[in-house]
Image (cartoon, rainbow, N blue to C red; front, side, top):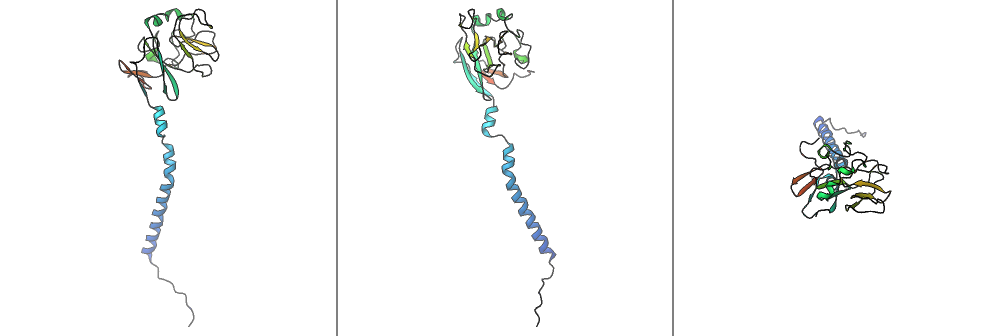
Length: 203
């Protein structure tokens, strides 16, 4: 008897089941493969933390003192100015580049005043020299300095000798072209500063 090939009869239901199963398995596999890519779109915990506001109490900052905190990878200067320091500002107007703080990139609307701050005594600045990114030194005392015999207090960048007054405004004829920026910030209460969020209603 000749060997005849044996063919199973067509089973449309079984074929549909196998097709559906293959499609489901493929979709699940594609889903698992996509997970790492989708996760890569979301910011890491470290990135979220770096962009979060920085909260700092002011109770331990004495008159004439400054502390430095980090926000978005940048040093933020927080200084408590004395009344005498604030009083020197008007006398600096003819010596600085932008006495009225008209540059909105450096001075947001909420700090556009003679103090460049919300409260006259509390100064908040990004502590990066606008020349080449060095860290300016806080020299608040009114006394002669090697770089300025008539120093009235402020910031001095040791890298290329740029000078800023006690409001962070840059002096004329300096390597640095702009004032030290004022970051967004507001007061949570009288003794708590929130850096990274401007006051409600601020432009």
